[in-house]
Length: 382
Image (tube, rainbow, N blue to C red; front, side, top):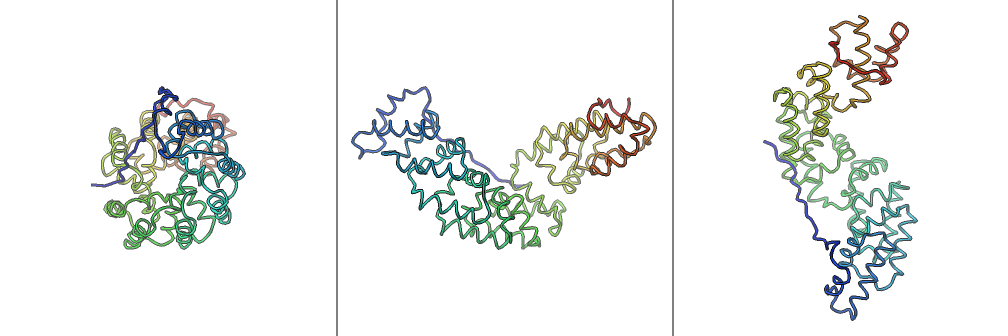
């Protein structure tokens, strides 16, 4: 029924670490115009290892696309990156992913882009974080690619703070084809009546969902409407966020976990409409929560389905301590056996503490120990 992103993993062929380095450089004609390829490649590999922190295997692979004849420019690049907060680990990974960066002009190619990002309010550790997430940014055109994309995004996000948050989620926004990708997908949301402010929220929360191929994005949006979501409501955008970044295989596996605990299709749809972020959880998290709530706490699957926010909470830090508190109160008949446990578990921190902890702490001091996670939860039937 639904079509999702299909990702193809392209694996680059690597030279085996067991291959003799000497034999490799003697038999690989990297540049026919170089008089002594073995000597110059040796310099390149040595520099990549000693100055950039690459492994031998990474250095040999990188030496196929970059040749260092002298170290003046590469040294300047490394020094500049370090000045802007790139750690040795960042630099090593950056060079392994984009070896030609070492031969770029530091003042013409690198500095203007970093300074532009800083002018947007991106400073400190956020600079390497954003650039590191999409290394090709440093080799993209500032005037033809980066600035036009940023200007387009500013039209939706209004503030630099929102823009920075969006870029932290996906730096691909800087390099994507605006006309072929973002514009059609945003137009699809508008055509279905999604408010502009919700479109902006989607860009900030999960911009990768808007980078989906336009025909697939349309199918996702139509499928969400078929499931009963209203385009004017915030939950519609949350559903788009989830369905557009989860593969069909993973989606079905997560549903299978829920149905294995007795959920019907209607219960799944109810839960997903209430809390679309349910499907962001891993299969293990979904299974662990269902197992605890049904087999330990004794709740029915239908009760869990009406409160799927429980899947977004921690079993150890929230569910177990709260259940332990309720167990103490039930054992002392301070709360009735007909207590809505699901509601108690899903209520906010302040409400739960006031309703079930501070209210009874004098007559039942054990609730403090239970709430602190120092009491074993035996189950409500014990």
